[in-house]
Each structure stands twice: as C-alpha cells, then as structure tokens.
Length: 454
Image (tube, rainbow, N blue to C red):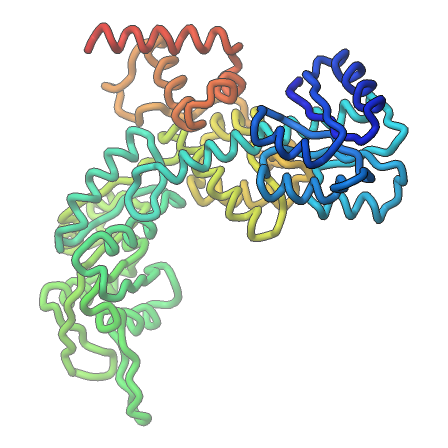
C-alpha cells in the first residue's frame, strides 16, 4: 500500500534520507524542515500521512500532532523520537499521533507503521462513506434498509400509519415486529398518545388478564390500571398474540367489540380508545383451523396485514444493519472499532440468520467485545457464522415468479452490494471476490443496458 507521505524534520539530511528509502518502498515523499511549513502544505497539497520528528526548533512535533488532529483528523501522524521513553510515546499518542518509532529509524519498522496508518485512514474513509449511506437511507421511523422487500414495507407502512384500523404484523422471531409497531404509532395521528406493549407470552393467565384489563383495589381501594386504560388515546401493542391463552381470547374479543374493559374483581365498565396492533410469529390461520385460536378474534385483528421479510431476504441490508450495530456497541464500550474486514462481511452476507436482526445484533455486539483490531475479522464472529458456507441470502424474496437467470441474479447481487457499501467499488470488489477491472466492466455494461432500455 503506497501513498503521499510528508516528512517533517529540522534536519534536512534526515528528510532526504527518508525520502530516498521510503521511495524505494513505493511511497511518494515530500519533506519540509519545519512544522509551520508542514501545516501550510496540508492546506494546499494532498497528503495521506505524516512522519514527523518530536523535538524540532520552533513548533514541536507534539504540537504539530495536536494541530493536525484538530484541523486534519483524517491524516495519520507517525512520530519519530530519539528518546524512546514511554512518557514520550504516551505524550505523542495523547497529542493525536497514530504511532511512533524511535531514532535511529529502522526503515522496515517505519514502513510497517506507515502501511498501518494508511490502512487506518482508508478504513476511516470507507466507514464514513458507509455511515453516510446509513444516515441517508430513506426508511420509516427507526427501520433501516434499502432492499426491495424493505422498500415495499415502507410503502405499506406509510399507507397504514394514517389509518386507525387494527393491524396484524406477521414475521419470524427477531424481524423487528415491535419496532414496526412503534414506527406505525409515531407515524400516525395518535403519535402524541401513549404506546403500551403487552407480551402475551409473559406470566400466568391471571397475571396477563390483570395486565390487560386492570384489577380493582379490594380492601385498599388502590386500583391497578390495565393496558387498555394506559393506552387510551394512543396505541396498544399485543406482542405474540398467537400465544394468547384460549381462556383469555373471548374476554379480549368482547373488550374489542364493546370498546370497554372490565377490571378483574369488579363489574365496572371502563371505556377506552386505542388503536390495536398485534404481532405473531405463528401461522394464525393454521391455529384457527386447529382450534387453538378463535376465528372471530382472528378476523377482528386481521384488518390490515403486514408481513415482515426475514433478514436472509434483505441482501445488502445486512451490512447496513451491521454497521449501525457496530457503531452503537463500539461507542458504548469505548472501543475504536471502525468496520468489518471484507471476509467477515462476506460471511455475514452468506449466513441465513435464523434469529434475524436480533441474532445479527448479538453477533456484532459479541464481535465488538472480542476484537483486538480496528476491524471485525472472521475470528471475531460466532462459530455458527464462521462455519457456515452456503449462501442463503435471497435477493428478491421467496416468490418463485421473481427468480431469473443466473446472469440476472449476479447483476442484482452486485448492485445490492454496491448499494450496501455506498458505491465504494474497491470495497465491493473485495466482498464480491472480483478484481476491480472486472467489477468496473460489469457495472459499465449495466449502465449501458439501462441507457439502451430508457
């Protein structure tokens, strides 16, 4: 890896020597004998990295590091010190230096430090580009994704949010059903009201009934409000409604029909005004046929039906989500983890994600905690992801009518990877296992075909 290096040392002979030796390793080298001049050149010239002495007349190398970190944070600085003490090294790093080497400089050591610094700079640029892609994604609420299934979902949610009709959200575990419910709430006319979620799988039946309908205070006169009361004026979300006990189903149906909740232990009727959203990972139609779920309650819930795509059907969204989770967890634990190594990214794309987005989030959280590098590598991933080879990432969903030729599949996959990495061709080429010329040729053909058909 080569780049434009600026050498800063008040000894011109040292500058010339480093210019010659680094040039033999493929670096393009310019030099100056003062830190002040170096700062001026940064404003005028393209510089990829700086090699600077620490002790110089005028502005010191440590002060130069501070000024570069403040005004050109994307340019890494490798400092040279004749002292080699721990205090000097710590001072250089604190001042903003990327790395340090001791004088007399061993050229091989300096070359390794520069290559790492340039790799760090390139990684920061790639991650910044991917973050801009994440920030610019036109999603719905906190949902993230640019794949075709997600774009269809956004369109459906926009139409659904403005309605007050009941919504049934279907999706595998970990696909983000509650996130979708909250997005519908925030996008609707009830956004100013409460959002109350009830887990229909939690606790015994009596406790679930109490949570739904409330309970009278008995001797203490203290009444516990039910979810219908707490959500009045807003949205009530019944999570995993398919697991609702059969004894509670008729009571829920009666409450929905009358729009009245009757707290346990009393005959008092409490009116409510809620928008109902329910979710399940079960096949409710099959549950109805098997007599496990009331048909009339199913019809009451299934006014608007929204099906969430599994993560394996979302293609390049996997990398967008991984970057979001990586940024969040790295900031949370205070680690400088920038992104994914290309092979790790390829493994994420090929894994089928049976636990969907929740499993991906756990995977990235674990990898951030374990990695010792700036990029998550294959060894940082869980064993299940590392060992999986066959690609289960679908590029259009499960509808057989959307399947095409192998050439069409390749085209769609390449374009999804390009979209996921924010158009960065070098990164896309690595993920795809192509050399850049081959990728450029394919992209050029796609552009020409599009122009020909437009």
